[in-house]
Image (cartoon, rainbow over all chains, first blue to last red):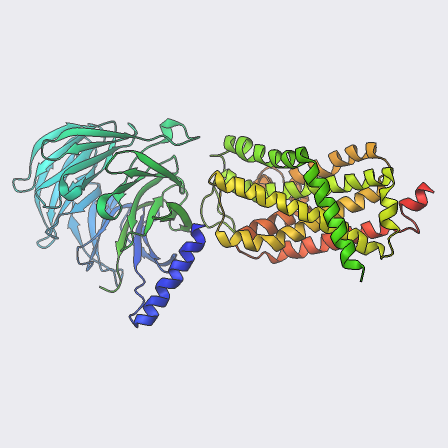
Length: 329
Length: 262
């Protein structure tokens, strides 16, 4: 049913644009392809790949500057963060990132990148303006998940082998707390204006919810997909729907995305997507969600309201991260 | 004009017979529902590896087999109503029907429309139950599926009709059911996509691709997603015409069963 509704809303949106006389903003989703050393650009109107851009080796983490003027890509095997002009696709310059940058997060000041260096057990802080490393912070082994609180005061690194979330004070660039989570934490996000921190654990198969004020664990979310062995239910990336009411959680090789109620911490739905889903991003109004499915090499588009997958789009090999970009900016 | 009242009467007789046999209605629904809710549940995670039209994304096995099960309902129903023809013949009521002052092809067509109407009622009941279990199609698909279902019903009914013209006794019919229904159902795209068949055997794939039931199922599958499948339509039309011609030939008083029985 949703497919049709989707088509209709699409047509309606196009018609509305035509009536209002404003240009149709064909917003985009940018996807890093880990094994192809490319970034695929998906047009949100047509749901097709419109551009493929060559980047450094093994691109993983991908994010835009707050004003979408530049794209940052973790080129893990090139040991650098590339700064790319999204209009031309050209690499403008590279940032010193420390070894094997996997994931990063841009501070709300739009200037400092917090980068997880997977092989070095370090979190590197880079100033994107001076292109200098501001600080390197020792964290647990195999750091990966990165988050910064909305007020910019706290940065989080999760370490996959130490199984901890490390809390960094961004003014001193020092650790002020470490909290244990389940096995192999992969992703972290602040919710509800920075009151809660969620950390997903890939092997543990859970999401731990922390109260940011006290750093105490207040809830743990479990997942169970019908007909899928629990070992294959591996939460990795997750994103929050409009108003932080629900979280969409990628469950890796279970090939499903879970919809979690952010108030009750209960899982409400599971949506079938492509194989080994890891990360995702929304479109502008958060009506569509784009998930990267590594093994099947595609991006599944989810109708957020209907909670149904509507299309899967072939991209490069092993798509890893996804980032939204408006084109009318 | 006696043609239309005759058509109406024959359809009405089929409908009455069907409604009076409540077990038949339930049995006709239980069969596909067991496939959908028991068999498909076991295969839930097995599919979803490749996206083929009309699907745009990964689907569960339940979703995949719904069109095939619609076809299954029509296949069984087509055969069952032709079984009733053999019964009619044994009981003598067919003689009455065939002596009506109308062309024989029209009477056979009316009979066919009767069984197709019943099939379609069953299919929509099945689709409604499937939707209640969360396996639903685009809303428009339920409308666009109707012509596809009518054609598929006519094709399978015509096949049953053709078969029944060559079967002299009820006893023989069971064997034909086994030799027609099961191969037709299993050697089609109803339960597994053709590309999956090709993985195990090229020959099996080719047999499936030549099976008219495959094309009827694909026609229904596309129609359920409000999409058009030209080749499937062509094949189904062709098969319908061929089966219908065979049935008319089989029931031709000059050579068919009347002569044989005489």
